[in-house]
Length: 171
Image 1 (cartoon, helix red, strand yellow):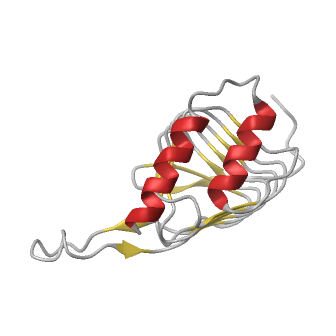
Image 2 (spheres, helix red, strand yellow; image 1 turned 180 degrees about the vertical axis):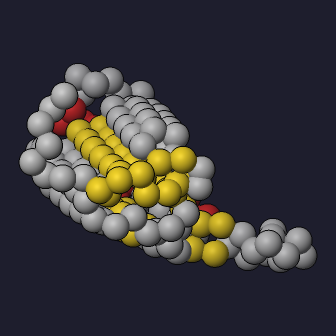
């Protein structure tokens, strides 16, 4: 695990020196980081931070805004057409509540982000959560439970605000 964290730190340091105009280089470094080629529709604005990188799976046409943190040691699966706002944290790991075990044990639980999800700025998603397709996580939300498909959630802890209807016109 330590070797993988070191590898990720070296790759993200290189990635974070790039600018928005370096899209091809960003895609190449991110592909190296996760161990799989991302498609030409993938876009990331540095800086970006991760604990390992090799447990991240990314679908097609994914957008990741600046200053995101993905602690992926528990597994992170991001579906097609996902948009992730700035300062979003996807945290798949944690520690036991028992004080005597906190430094000895790391608990990993996967996060699954469904197709066409939008995660608003500053949101936090905790390990063990599945976000259903077409859902929206409001800015600043802390998501500790599964999000049903076609749902807007917000708050801390996040709760369902309302259903999203597909035919809604833009206001």
